[in-house]
Image 1 (cartoon, rainbow, N blue to C red):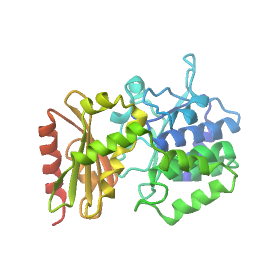
Image 2 (image 1 turned 180 degrees about the horizontal axis):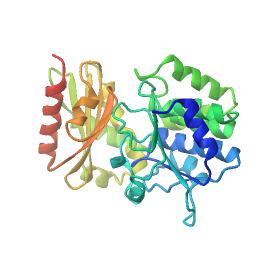
Image 3 (image 1 turned 135 degrees about the horizontal axis):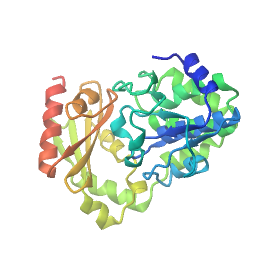
Image 4 (image 1 turned 120 degrees about the vertical axis):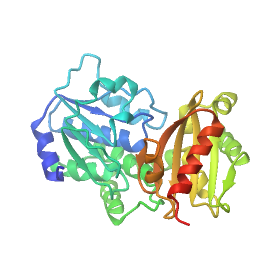
Length: 315
């Protein structure tokens, strides 16, 4: 496993670099990728982001300026915020087994790169990227803005329990570059579309409670998305809703991506290790936030995830 210094030295020696982001890209993977690309270009290197079909209205503006042209032929491939090759977008499957450097912060990280660096105690992969980029050169506003998106979105604007003193220190350093963090905060944390609010209302209306109210299960079937004409942008980070309910320490969100294919997002407190639950079904993540995919009718997906929680949860 590499140190920060070793990872920075590697990047300094490379050129013609392609950067991969994970399926259904969030602010952390896109922010890390854009910041790394900007930092490498500041060194005079050719660097691009591999196109990701899952971008939303929030993540796309940070990604688009660095998107790779079809003619780009990389010499080196770097992945950011990806715990396993199973999280590569379908169009990036050709790069499985070809990642030269994998940078991540998930405890379930599978070390699939030829070289790897991981910081599982970090709230966001953006914290680790900040330390690497700081050794490559000055942190400019062009680097700092997407890094702020990465760090702030993965810790719920510094409200989640994964936030540490280092998280705040990185954010403070990024703010000192003069970036417009206010606009990021408003867009990511204080603005919702009407459709998004209708989605949340439907989820709350149909919410199911278990284990004396400590576990809530919410679902987003395809029929609900279709009836509201909801987009991926409307559905981004719906998994944070359940944890806001008083008395809940284990929030399950089941979102149907295709008929009988359910994306499970688990957000938990100390009583339930989310990673251990999701690893039962081939997934992973963090102790308080993890995910997996289940197949079959809703009733079967519900049964499986509740069974997994019961196996792992402390009394």
